[in-house]
Every structure is written in C-alpha cells, then in structure tokens.
Image (cartoon, rainbow, N blue to C red):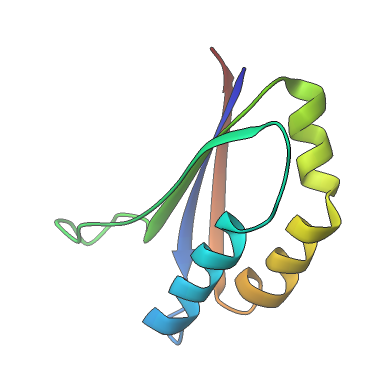
Length: 95
C-alpha cells in the first residue's frame, strides 16, 4: 500500500466555500484502488502551520500513478484546487 499525505496552504483570498467545494469534489472522484480518503483543516493552534491535509491510501505504486493521471482527479485539481492553492507539499510512503 502507498499512503499519500498532501499538505496544502491556500491563498489568502480562498473562501471556506471554495475549500469545502475542493474537499467534496476530490472525495467524490470515483477511483478504484483509492482507500481511506481524509481531508482535514488545520486547528489553527500555531501561525506557521499549513491550512489542510489530504490523506489517501492506494493499493500500490501503479494505482497511485494512475490516480495522478486520472481525468477526474485532474479536473478537480484544475477547477477547484489550482485557483486557491498557494503551496503544496507531499509525502508518499509504503506501509
């Protein structure tokens, strides 16, 4: 299994509605082999934290690579995330 952890910093102009729309759209992309999808907003306990995290598990490397190229995923990224994303950091690990 591959776990993807993506940390996001949104633009100052990003609204709660835009962020929620992104999270919902991403969660609703049908994709076989993706498991345990989670989206969480930061608790705002420090000033230097990222704004949100997306956590998802994939069957294997091939499945993860297919997700990266998936048209539904690409559409969500372009329509919902790109307009509000300031920074993205990612960690992938096997478990």
